[in-house]
Image (cartoon, rainbow, N blue to C red; front, side, top):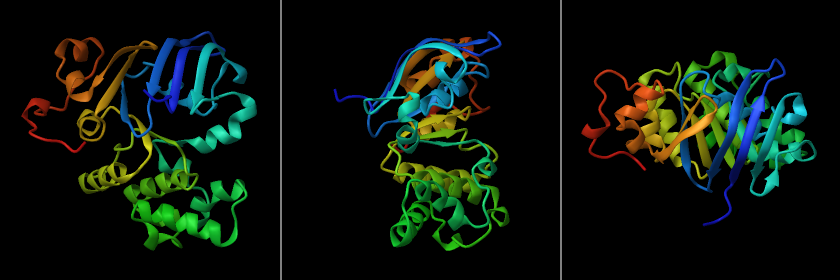
Length: 256
């Protein structure tokens, strides 16, 4: 098999206060995969995500071991600029990523910092907004947009960096049903590797053929999403619950 685009080996991490969040975790994601990262609160999901582009590391003040690499490039301080281009994180609250006066300025911010300018920068901005269906809003202030629209612009700010991996933290949270469906359509259309952290198990089933379950800082399952969601013992042991009335076995077909 090809070299993983994301390769996590033996990752352990304790915060400076002594709380151990990860205990020797392994995770390998290949180009083009869409993988859901599932688990109860406190499982270590956020700690793992923050290691993927170097926001957290043993170098950053914690106590850890193990390695993380992206397309063979180790996630260490000297490579952080390139790593943060390769790994784009879309945080749960879009307002954490939208802080300038217009949509155009927000989407241009990252690539401009990499040196892109002029017509090439404008083209990158418009292409990114077109991919999320927000090109018509390019000159609008982000705070005039709906929550769902702001989330799509937040995705565009990351796509503008041309990442190899798109990491989404609870992408469906606080979205109305139409916005939830529109975002799912966008995510399916992207030619990028996706790692999606979510408590929304139907969304994981719809979008991610594979799921990795974290619990107490270790990987306890790495299987097809359908198999995870229909394993009642696994679900109960790790505090994963399907919405009332939702049964994966009753769904005849789901988008790949």
